Length: 532
Image 1 (cartoon, rainbow, N blue to C red):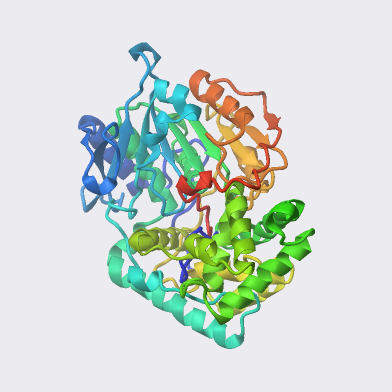
Image 2 (image 1 turned 180 degrees about the vertical axis):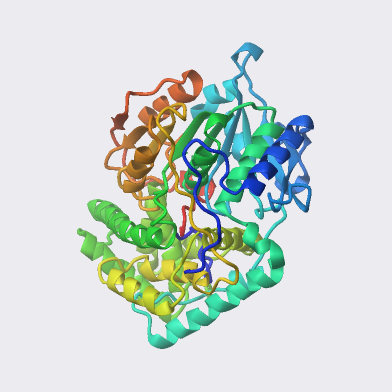
């Protein structure tokens, strides 16, 4: 699945011996299972010591930081270690009200949650912050947790770049060459460590973090990709879970991970792209971009054609334009600002579009790092088609009905076709009936990044899980957002352990205000799902 920051813009058939664990068992690979147990015991014996955060983390004084060591290779638990950076805000309530640590991961792969303790000051999180230490961290390879890089950040952020909806044979050859070079860069920089960036290792790291925090059982909330390795954790360590929230669930079916997930995602983004255009058309008195979704599309294509010929501000070409509007597929908080940027550009004022869509040099290093981890984890996790002909056939057909995101999603993930290390068989996520405590799944019915059928599949595979659906809405990442009904179910579960019997529905949150340019989503983590 494609992330908001895109590969190359700013925007296999080889299987390992890894097999899925039987429901309720520990890890399938005996050496790694013993390694996780040894690493967790070591972490519990020397609990994490929090102190002042390094300046590089840019966190306020109320947040504390620490590091937790995890093995690079769990088959060699005393071998090379990765120091995961961890952040925390202590529970603000009375000691008797404290329920332990709530660990959060925002997705990716490649996203950090070091910012998470800062939500303690927000009204939507006040009660949870009273009961829990809010804990964030950077997974292996991310940010300052032994950062992975595959490409010069300046090259990664180069702009303007092209994004043709119907790419020519020569353009495809160019992107194939770039994908091969990127995969080679990952191997050259990471060397033998490259194969250890996997979802199963992220789940193992989470168990070591649990032990280091002094928690006998884990309370965890994962969003987007965080739901996937959270589900892997639930499969491998069911007896270690206290409470678990899956916010915007990835489809855990091994046959979907990850190639087919991206096809489904591209199709879902087409539907969400239409939702945005319908909303813009409804407010034609504000934007003057057309009174129908087709009219708004024509306005968008006019802008795309113009920036193809003459990039806006010298930096916004069609790929940067598309990446910017992809964010509107994740969060409707962006709808008003994006519609305004289109409208103003067509009136002769390119400044809003340049401001919203231009790459930011100051974030290039973090963007490249996040993309490198994303690529390594997804390419390692599962078999990808090894011949471009398969990608070309599948996505040429898909682009006929879903042109908005399809080819950019291909270019994001194409390094996996040329990946230089053996790829694994995905874990068969599942739990035996009664093996898990109740878990909570949050899903928006029109979420494009993690389409709704994935939430249904996750609930099927985890007996006893409860699904909360925001109807007729498409926000990716619901916890602490604009829907009070969803937040109510989340609070009741995390504070009291209560859930509906099996499923519940919430009415959609209000549509965006067309005259407000408040991008509330702008400060959120990149909820990059899988090939997001």
